Amino acid sequence: MKNIVKYVLCVATLAGLWTVPAAAQNCSTLLAGINNWFITQPDGPYGVYYLRVSLVGNNAAGGYASFSEGPHGQPALFSYTPAQKIGNNTYPPYVKGNLTTYFSDRRFDPSNSGATPWAPFNPNSVDSATAQIFLQGSAALGIKAGEIVMQNNTWGGTTTYQGVCANGLMTWSTQVPPTYVWTHFTMSLNEDFFPGQ
Image 1 (tube, rainbow, N blue to C red):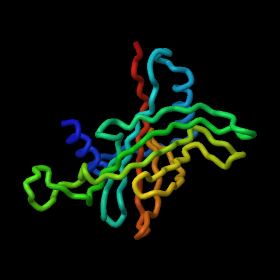
Image 2: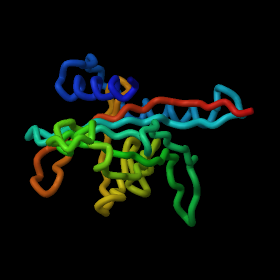
Image 3: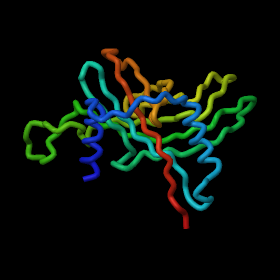
């Protein structure tokens, strides 16, 4: 049932049926709040703090839509690394985690009856990526708050994007090879705490 709800929300979002009123928000403000949450640990020191992330993408040519969550159908839980000095450089704080991406154009037959594959988002044909999101910037290192470094673990290569924030969501657009048609991505960022013992 949980996967059906995710699928319906993903399709509704990509189709534009479910929208959120536009309210511009600086990524620095949103991400500073997340960084502060990790630092202050408002739920106490006994537990684990994560950023729960999900990502949807929509190809402008209508070729495919994508949905990303954590490995094995679990939520994507990004762990926090505080600002750190390495050599003469101070690197800003970031969150980092793994994503599994499902694609609407990768079809399958859920009944395994040998019928023509018809269902989108084949769970046996996914891509894997590791994403790093900087929560603050560093002028000295040329890093901006909301910068996303995406490493494709399936096909290789690393790409950097600059997120734009509104309504608690981070978005960006890019031209994806080999066709270089524009693809728009929307990422949700939710604080998540697991109490310790």
